[in-house]
Image (cartoon, rainbow, N blue to C red; front, side, top):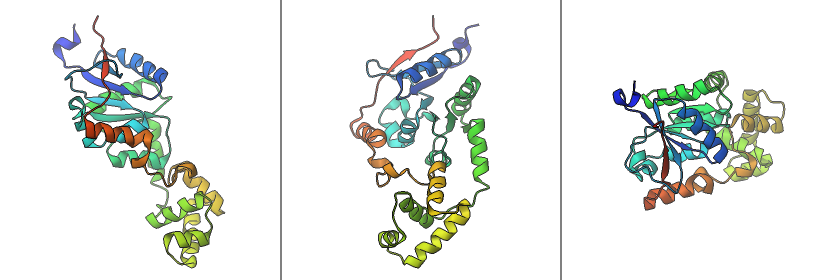
Length: 244
């Protein structure tokens, strides 16, 4: 039986910065007859085909959750976003979910998770792969840091002293020490350095090299997206379907 004769295919756009990884994802999805797969490619055009699901790396996914970015190109206006990434940091996963990403998968998982993730996200259900769901469940057992504690810890992570932190945040030195005591207790750390290391590994603070550069000013994430939203220019795509 011809699947397309009785059901509308789920249209999927693959956006991955690594061309080899992109090719592998496309090949995997093409094995499933319910999917019509499009590839991010500047040489071809998807036309007016409505995209149901975008399978994207973390940076692309975080840019596409902005409705203005999706609205800049009509086929993406109603697309749901599924992140497929190696980024397994608790804080980054939480930020993605809170930003509006509809699904989150980690590279290295079984093919069945990718197929299930695309299917579930296309049907309107949020989807987390097993390992991400477990990580988020574990995070619920951790004491949460306050926004001020995160600010203090971010400055610790880049090597600032307590005095420098007090000047930066316009608070008393004693207040900084109080925050550090609370932070170390919550993270079960025995030193400032260990606390910063734990927080960085969990994604609670940005890595030292990227601090002071917000996501919106990062060329790899926001510049291209902002240009697309303002100019109406987004990449065009090549269709790779299961049709003979």
